[in-house]
Image (cartoon, rainbow, N blue to C red; front, side, top):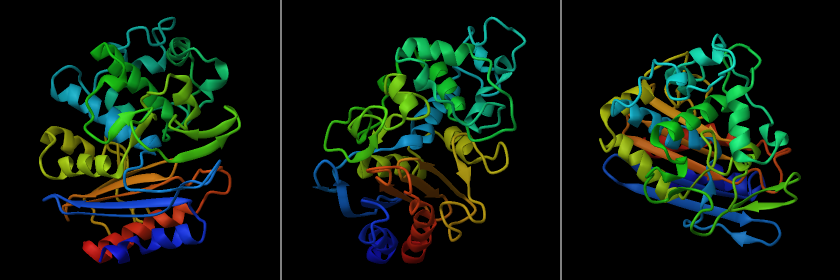
Length: 330
């Protein structure tokens, strides 16, 4: 059955849609399957992909790390999800106490229900992480309708740093998950024109790199085992129910605190149940958790290697894999 579930990813590797692909599937009671194909790197030399390779998880940092940190602090009574971020970051827009950023709440940030823009090339403003954090906090951000925004999670990451007095990389994430550099073999990502090299073991996201490597929106690395272990804890009661409920409950449309819920035509495929949440990462990663079926799967690829431009096979591959997983194991 696992071979049928892996067939779309294997076909994508064979036709060159992605250099390499790892599919991992886990159930609440611990049954798991992993399949691997292709290459961890094509440049500067070919390196076969293995189950032990670490992937740059990109925006999976948001739900696995940052949202979990915020929801854990809320469960501990250290923050109120409906309180403003300014409670944790009193210097947020400190030169304009009426600034709209000062009214943004933790819950709004988690669910991308703010006026902040999708992305900003913060790395082009300098290379001092402390100064760039100050820039994020003091910038008068242009207003617009709610969109999926890295800036929401940059602010949430700064809030976690302020509340805990430590960097995000100090948070215990569990084995197989780590802010970089990862402690093992790692897949290559892009031949970065800004840094002038093929990236391997350093975060792909330019803004996360400029912020020191560990940021609220990106910077997390993981193995397939680490991602599956984390997902299994959500399925089997290893995470407090208040956190799981917040991850599943809608806040704005299909957005929850950290995730998307299933909708027709979404990235996880239409076969999964309505009780499924999922998230993707720009480098070619993704994780989906179907609570009705007690089933989770992760698709990890290095689709941006050696370049992000034209690397669009992932958009059809993700739902195809979801359909195949449910057909084979659901």
